[in-house]
Image (cartoon, rainbow, N blue to C red):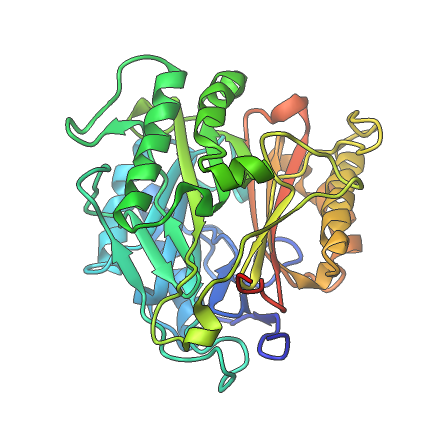
Length: 423
C-alpha cells in the first residue's frame, strides 16, 4: 500500500495564508486536514469588521475557498470544530453556519477558549473527505460513500450529525453530558457528567455495531482542569472495554483541553475518533477488511497509563497530546515557552521515529498555549522541526494546561503502509 499515498500540501490565494508556518490543507489518503481558519480577509490580511456573526462568516468563506480550490464541495466536510471566545456567540455562529450547510450537516464540536490568534472572536476548523485519495487511479482510490448516523439513544441536534464515516474512520460529534430522553444535562457533578458523555459515545457506536475499543483517539474538554482526576475515575471504568483490550491494556490516544466554557454550561465534553474496519463502499474488499488497530509506546517519550502515545489504524497515526516532560526524569523541561515547545516537539519526534516515520509525515499539528502571545516564540522552535511548514495547524489559547505547562502539542501523522489485516 505504500505506493498509493503521498502527503499533499496545498494553498490558494483565495484564503488567508495564515499566521505562522503551515499549509492551508494537507491531504493524505482519503482525508484533507485543513488549518483552523481565522476571520481574515485574504485580500487585506486583516480581521473582518463586525462581531461574531461576521467573523464566523469569514471563517466559513475561507474554508469554502480552500475546499473549492481542491475540487471539493462543502458537503464533503466530515467534521467542523468551532472555537469561540464567548460561548454565547454560538447562536450567532449558527445563523451563518446554516447557510453553508443547508442540508447535510457534518459532525461538530463547539468550545469556548481563553484566547484566539489576532484576538479573534471565532476560529473554525474542518476535516474534509478526499475520495480520490492522494494518488488518483491507485487501487485504494474511488468514489467512496460518506455514511451518516444518528440514534435516538444519544442526543440529537439539527446542526450536527452524531457520526460521519468516510473510508476507514468514524468521526463523532463531541458529546455533552445530556440525557437523550430528557434533553437536559444530567444531575450531579463532573463524574456524573463524564459518565453520561461516555455513555452517549457508547450508544452511538452500538447503533453502528462498532465496539467501544475501536476508538483510536479521545479529546476531553474540561471547564475546570482540576476535575481531570474525577473524570479519570470514570474514564477507567469505560476503557478498556473488552477482554481482548484488557489483556493488551489498550487505551486510546488522548488530549485533554481546558475550555473557558462549554455549551449548556457543561463541565465536560468528550469527542472521539473511531476506526471503521470495513470502510465505506465501494472500496475493494482486499483494501478495506480486517485492518487492525496498532497501539505503540516508546521509552523515548513520556508514558501514561490512561493513554497510548500513538494509535495507528489504516493510513493514520493519532498521537496523544505531548506535554514538555523529559521522558527520562518525568520532570518539566527547564526554561520558558521556547524550551517547553522544543520538548513537546522532541517527544512527538521520538514517537514518530519509533514508528519508522519522519516529521515530514506529520499532516496536522494542534498547539495549545497558556498565553496566546507566546505563539511567535513557539514558531521559532517549530520551524526547526518543520522547516518547510507543511502540516496543517490549529493554535488556541487555553486557561490552563496539565502540570501547569505553558504549551501542549498533539499531532496526526500519515501511515503510508497502513495497518495490516487480521491474521
